[in-house]
Structure formats: C-alpha cells, structure tokens
Amino acid sequence: GALVYQYPRRTICKSGTSMRMECQAVGFQATSVAWYRQSPQKTFELIALSTVNSAIKYEQNFTQEKFPISHPNLSFSSMTVLNAYLEDRGLYLCGASLGAETLYFGSGTRLTVL
Amino acid sequence: QQKVQQSPESLSVPEGGMASLNCTSSDRNFQYFWWYRQHSGEGPKALMSIFSDGDKKEGRFTAHLNKASLHVSLHIRDSQPSDSALYFCAASEQAGSFNKLTFGAGTRLAVCP
Image 1 (cartoon, one colour):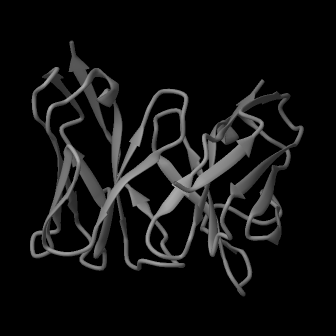
Image 2 (cartoon, chains in turn yellow, cyan):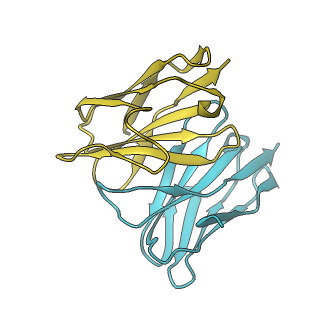
C-alpha cells in the first residue's frame, strides 16, 4: 500500500519559536498533497492543499506567512509553523494522494508548545 | 452545525460481534465518502471509500451508502480487539486530485475480549 512518512514524530517548542516538519511519499509520485491539523479534541482542519501543476492553496484561517510550505516535488513536502503559540498545538498530518481516490496519511508530527 | 455528523460517539462490542457506525452529511454537494481508522498515537488509515449507492465489502468491513439520504454506514463483522480505535467518516465534493476532505468528529470503538 501507499506509504507516507512524516518526521519528526513529535516536537516541543517554546512559545514564539518556529519548527519545521517534513513529509515524504514513498514508492509513488503523489498527485496531490494536503496538510491537516488534528486538534487535541480530535477534530480535523485542512491547512493547505497542493496538486500537480497548481499553486499551494491555503484554507481560511491558515496563511502562507504563518505556515509556509515547501514543495520541490510531490513526493516531498515540508511545512514550518512560524511563531508557534498554544493554539497551534496538535497533530499535523500530511496526506498524499495517487490521484485516483484516496488520501493516505502519515503518522503525523505532534506539536507541543510550552 | 458540522457538515459531517457521526454516531454514536462511542461504541462497545464484544469480540466476535458486529460493530455498526453511522455517518450523515448535511451538505448535498458531498458525493464521495471514506472511512478512516485511527489508532492511538498514529495517523488516520484509510479503510475504504464508497462513491455509489449500495454496499461495498472488503473483508470484514462493509460500507453502505444511500445518496438520497446522504447516509453512509460502516459495519465490522467478527470484531477483534485490534479494531478498537477512533473511526472517522470523511466526505468530499470531488474524488481525484482535488479531494478536500471534511471529517466527522469520530466514533470511538472498543472491542472487549
């Protein structure tokens, strides 16, 4: 099956600092990559969606200035959380799609902000 | 109001029993549905997709979709303790490259040995 790796698995940062997380699709060229955040209450928010031949599209309440994403190719993506505060904590999930039907997620990067 | 609603919030079934999870959408634009399972400390894993009316069976898992009522269900036959997890229903207006998923709040399933 499709494999999506995310690292680090967990990270702790001080309030106001930034941290970077990475995502790699293994064994396939993803046609779309999505970043989600799962809150401590387990609800999901879409941060941004990127597809082949299109710019990265951010959802409402999320901006490139706060969550810059680097996407050299669709098998690798990285996202930085700039100036992290308590409300940014959660499990950041990267999902990659082969373009057919299903979004496959990695194990996520759990962000704790002190 | 959440666009994708799941019920029950939690469910407990004995090992070997049948678990039934429900999901209803309030948005008629949602035509494509997925079920995901998330074990503690992991990301959500795709179980199955269903896009057409009727049943879709994969092993012990059967999904049922009724597009008229925007209701989708997941039935787990012969439940195992390893099936204990959070189950999410997700819906999208489009399949393929632009699948922007809207998730429900989840059903926590406990399978008791």
